Length: 393
Image (cartoon, rainbow, N blue to C red):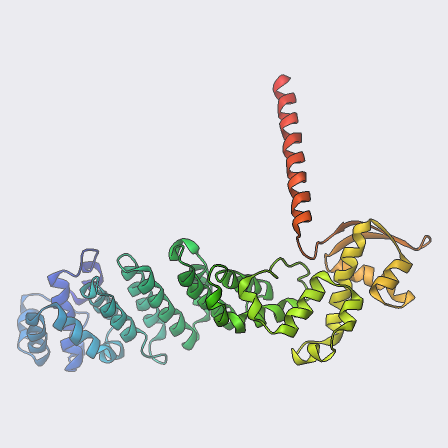
């Protein structure tokens, strides 16, 4: 067998004896410095020559001891394999190692550790091999072991700064169909996704959405909610600091309750309170959380205007009172709110009034859900009526 055919020989069902022998031969020639043989063909003469070398003797002895000995030799000499072997040979030997590990989850983890042991040497090849080990083992391993292997792949990619791989890993970590229904397992996967999103400098909205999903895994596991404290605090701070997020239905999340008490108070004020409520807060809260005071006040005013605008038609005087701003700032805040996508409105300067046609809900209460349900029912009724009319014609 040509040594480059190793990968093709290690298909589902385990490594063939020929593939295992070839793996031993690759290790033998690499360990004993006979690298000119790696990747070559093995006719009768080649096989006879190899058998007479130190590498050939090593290969024969290891092969004769059986699968466990082959796996032990491969893991012991993984550094040599990755240091001196050709890409095809390395991938082939790793495939044999994974097949020999079989259903033994600890052995599979050993193989993964060998592959991901160094971040300064042949990183791309190691990433490909790690992915191959994970994919092959995933077909047989338990969900817990699958997640453990995935976390090792993700950790390696972060340490090796393989940023191009992050989107693939993030999508995989967030796929609930892969991890099942166990909340703790999904929590670990989502934590990995959060870490990767941080490393990848993802958009604040994407990171925030993933952190909310993570916090949601604590709903029926209040006893473990303490471990969510850091992400809970980060989630609250991210929402408050964001110049694009003005709606939130996450205050009731069990995992959020372990965030900083002052941060939660500030968040609650933004979502449900008034500018007066905001000004009544201790000014040190904003600075202690590392937030910009002017930006927080601006967000409070924009969110307060979205609530005031639900009246439909509002005078400049009402806006001035609600936002506690100067007369000549009223129009500016309307324009800023429209620009932020929080409201749609038209100003009538002559009448000193603003007509709002759409306002973003800061939170969805029971009343909002009832109104939405009513609108959906009305829409369905209208569609059914149109369908009847069309059928009649």
